Image (tube, rainbow, N blue to C red; front, side):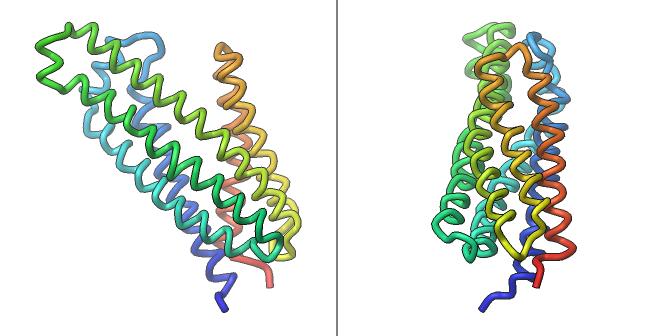
Length: 226
């Protein structure tokens, strides 16, 4: 029989790794170099900060690989509530990050590779290569948005299971359901109304911080109720 408090604390620690790594990759490695609508400036920033850009790829890989373990551990913690639903919840997380988001990192890598490729440099102008790099950056962002649909559904199921579990405070479940709506609003909102992407970004940022960070801290401290 596994120790639920110990598993809960390990899950919280791994969640912290994911939050820090993914936050660095998106908030530092990509956001500091990306300038919307300006391919030349974005390309120059990527080349000037190529080491930082590569670390963004590495930290994302660490985060998404860690999410595999988190998916399994959350299933173990919540299968007593509803085993089939807990399994579906874990599968949606596996699809979102280890699946879609990891494959989407090809766009992140390509944004730098096209700028550093000697072969492409001999065939295309700097402006053309910059436009191609910006295309890959925007494709990566769209891939991130698409992964948010599966992750939003995961958060919704996770929130429901947390609310029904006797081992976790109901408020944690409510916060996670709020985070799920944040992810889904950003994903579908960006697709339908891209001109309001800043608003959608604030919605998901605040709701995810409240839900995921709170859950992470609670797990690290408490692990699980007796």
